[in-house]
Length: 111
Length: 118
Image (cartoon, rainbow over the protein chains, first blue to last red):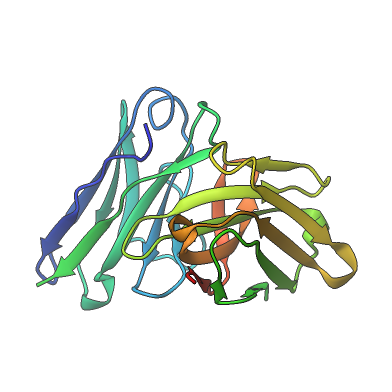
């Protein structure tokens, strides 16, 4: 599998909650609790939002949370704000020789 | 405060060698893993390879034959050399500090755009 499967786009209104899925296989997402999520504004560097499936780095809002079920990881954003509008990428360790594999990215639009 | 900054040419001709450098400030490169990650225009992220604090490297299998990463300890820099480039190597290249216990990237450089074109 070359990339993890993410929806191309999701949208929500300010104050609402959204969830982005990231589907892999038992060789990556399902096999290890080593999923991370990144927020990227166009032309900017990605920013780590979640690591080890559920953990947040210091300074990241608790409106961002991660979870996983079998081969699919999820990033949930509650209380949507205009500043959350960005691209989001998941990433997982893989046992198939490429160290890590990224998702194709999801564009979040705040309506 | 740890900062990473990529540098190098923005334009490389097809079949030539791409050389990039990542200068790290606020941390020693001998204490972490360091990765290069790239992003083709309008596309997603692709891990290229990492360099660990022991000097060992791990490269993406698809690039292994063309890629070399190395350290300049005295200058606290990590460098990348990619030979025989094609248009498919056109991308925004990032260096990133890599957590080797849990395989995530916690600090990124601003990135450098590299275009392969004659």
